[in-house]
Amino acid sequence: MTENNDGLVRGEDGLLRPAWASVDPMLREYYDTEWGLPVRDEQGLFERLSLEAFQSGLSWATILRKREAFRAAFADFDPEVVAAFDDRDRQRLLADAGIVRNRAKVDATIRNARATLALREHPDGDLARLVWSFQPDETPAPRSMSEIPTRTAESEALSKTLKAHGFSFVGPTTMFALMEAVGIVDTHLVGSHRRGTSGIW
Image (cartoon, rainbow, N blue to C red; front, side, top):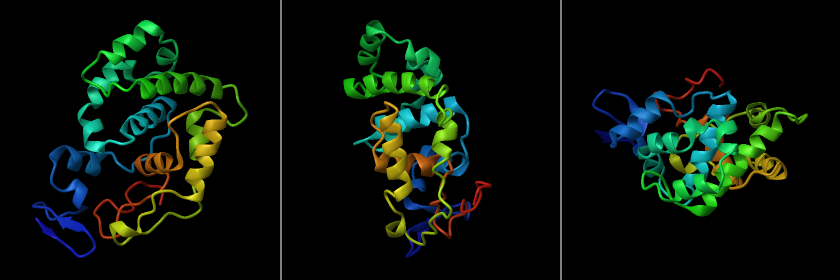
């Protein structure tokens, strides 16, 4: 592998990726096949929202390695099932070594599931429609990692709106990471083989 001045690394397959997606096979697979592709369904967005919240303060690799355990623990992130979780479920989750056992984040996930259901009856629309309504008119075109923003006016507005709807662990930086992950913005570096592959930008 060889690294360019812009932070891209050319892999053995000849493709350019950012350094974070160039060494760990799991992260490379995630980068190549999922990160930045559109997610427009309620359950899919609830999962990504939940995982971004659990990632807060941790590395994304940690969350990705535990993803299947998270799915098993949270009923594949079906918001209707999670919204019905009770104290027994909380205790089960806090005893589950396969996930991140953080009481505040577990409680937030259950609370966010209930807020997701409530959104269905709101004029703002369901979770997917609400989140996608904050798609900006333009996407960043970073040529190096230092040019990628960590928050934007849109992620700040999304954060504020979700909080008003009862969501938590949805700060503007976390919401920008969500927007990147689900294709609302394209922050693939300009030279990356994934740049412009979302069908959105």
